[in-house]
Length: 99
Image (tube, rainbow, N blue to C red):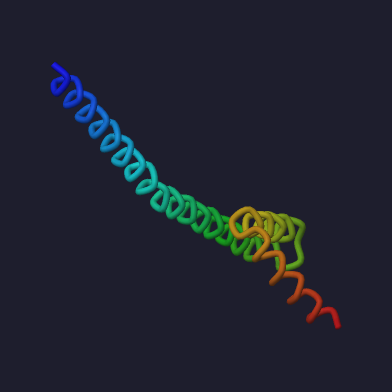
């Protein structure tokens, strides 16, 4: 009787441990693909805004209100996608152009 309950507890413990390990593996295995999908979405969004900027420049001129609007949208899209990394590079480039 003692052996039977000990065997059941150990099998249950092993199964629970195996289930937790498998669940953790599946949880962490899905994270990189989600990040890659977000990056692809960002690249598509930026490419679409670049096309709209080019169309605005062709239709209305380089210094038009429409072109300025799409430049602003492109800047915001880059900030959303790349965050601090983009801001640091943009500030450094902006300061170099200003002086």
